[in-house]
Length: 375
Ligand code: MN
Ligand code: MN
Image 1 (cartoon, rainbow, N blue to C red):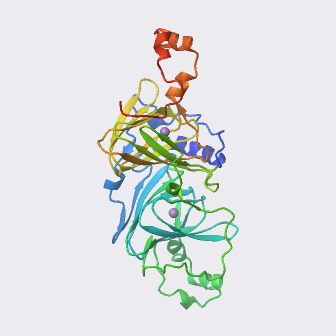
Image 2: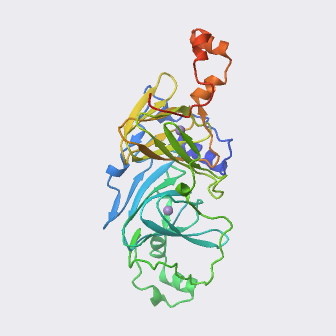
Image 3: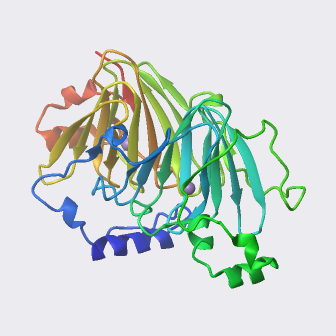
């Protein structure tokens, strides 16, 4: 645990995508003869349930390897609010899968932003910036949350009812210049999911009147734009901090693969990777040095985690197109692909390295493959 805490502290000093972060001490979990499991069946877990709302977590508790990133699958039923709260130890990034959701977030300058989201939209709330999430309309909303810290949940999420419910009434009365009786009947414990009426279509006024919008938007319409890249076997949307400036610590990807297509062998020099299967059946491999190699099969609702620097690949192993949501704990996306590495080295080196004739390597791809179609 001490090792993990140290690594976490180092990463926090590198906030903003600073590339100086390095793991100096090996994680004991990754130092064994075998690689540990790197998948978790997120949607099959129970999580926290209230009526037709739920929050299912994949933190280090459920997926011990996932120290750098946690994920949550959350559904809110009509009229439900994920109550006002903040995360002391993590920024929050989200992708909306289904339904509509309204958020309000406040920054340290006291500026609040309220946005309405639809499927394919994303949000980003910096660490410690308080927010709420509210289902819009008569259908439930379902979204995937990504946190840039695998330990975000335990002792890291601060809810308004939990706080107000434990402050002595005289102190509350003084704080708000109200009689103590104003706080009679307030919840005495954490509400987490609050239930009420379906909110109005128009965003209601704040108590303070007209809003002063923050300089950087917390919302981005990820799937509204064209994919970042299109290949014969698939396509990728990728939104990092160059496209979505407030998202300084998370890059989000939607990866579509045709049956049999492969996101080729690669690694990320500066970030961990968290995966969630929206659709399809995929096979994920991971290479961990010292002869260690592991394959996991993921189905819809399954999550997986690749530590920074570990080699990996993603293959659509099913008979229908696959779609994955992938998050990285950096705002500056970096990757090195095996095909580009080989194509970028002198042929004589390749011949000697593999003890094969140079003519063989003349047949290799001459540039980065990224996604290889089914053969
Ligand atoms: Mn949150
Ligand atoms: Mn990757």
